[in-house]
Image 1 (cartoon, rainbow, N blue to C red):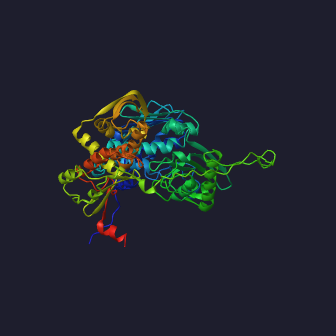
Image 2: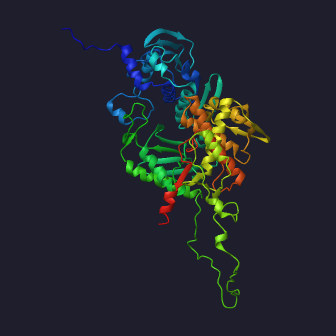
Length: 593
């Protein structure tokens, strides 16, 4: 029998390795930008076309490579950063494994132009599917230009499973942000499809954060700092009042490397717990410096999960630093006492004591507590027997339900929260805010389907500026926003003028609504148009719905109930919360036994 075990060819082995390192265009961006940083560049340009499918180009002014190094860089496990196994435990660079370029070249068409500062000639290298197609000398331009074209051209299955351009570019932005946030001393520039997305000049760390995420953060960032023998902690946390339920900006870095660390994340959130509502998350940008020998970055292919030797002690240091930052900012009101002196207290004597009088009690002799009720309703008529007339059950069919809602039935409003109406078999309780959410959601969805928006013009238009990350979902939002009733004019640089809004939103913060919509769509994803439309409609419905505590007139309550029962899903909100509850006659009877 013949032998069946054999070595894989280099091209196949590189494709397998590429599956671990290069998962999507964002993976290429991460590897190339990190290489540029490690090369000592102080200017890095990223050019992307079609969310990386067509082109990913990184231009840097780093140290460059010789002709031999340029060729060796594309070999598997070729690296300039490790000479022995001991070096794995004292890493001070971002990349180190030597797999990135070989993996990229295995699944794309790659061109490299590179030269060192004093080289008289540079090197041009072209590789496709791990095969060198051209290598020649060119005019020198200090630094490196990596151009990656037609990613996954030779692996159709991988290319097929890439997400939409909006989603893939959002992932590219995520990787780009993780590098630029830890390197404010480097100029970065990002272009997508010939449009400049980010231009980040050399700055301090705070300014770099504002340049990436918007100047609105300026008043929200609290500085923190802690210096110990184990770890140096610095950076910023957001003020408690700007915590978010979703899409919070949360970044950990160690030794200039982005990382995920659930244990340290818990340290931050626990420090915030007394000051923010349950379920909300704080923003934070925390930078840590430790002895490289005390961490292990080689435990995850993406190098984002890092193991620390002294995690428990560092946990306590982070918690203390965050609490101190909150306290120093006066974000939390506190009492301060002068330790060297006594507290000033007014002193009264018999001579200067003001005259006192016994409190007077006014009795309203005609008051009858049973005339007032906690709910708002029509005055009870003398013909009280009519309150007990039989009423039909709520029909299941929408048309019949609408007919039921149009009947003249007595409606009570309890505390501006529940609408109570009698039935033959008991009482129906309707959560009026949830009912309004359902009604508005259906209306917005109908407008988007029919592409008929009704806009109310603003006398003084407002300006909204989106971050580059938020701008990635705008192509999915703009049409639906117009159909709902928003009139937005593009001012360039991800800024828009709000010239008109849907009717019913006159007293709502329109800028906040639009940013919440962008956050919701970013969280939901942009893969299915219907899901995007539903996320948009639900966010707007929740913002525009009547608040708890608002009493409706009888006519308003009648109209709300009629529209609710006309819905195809009157019993639940779009996110699955109960709207209607029936208290049966049997249940009522049990309460009086």
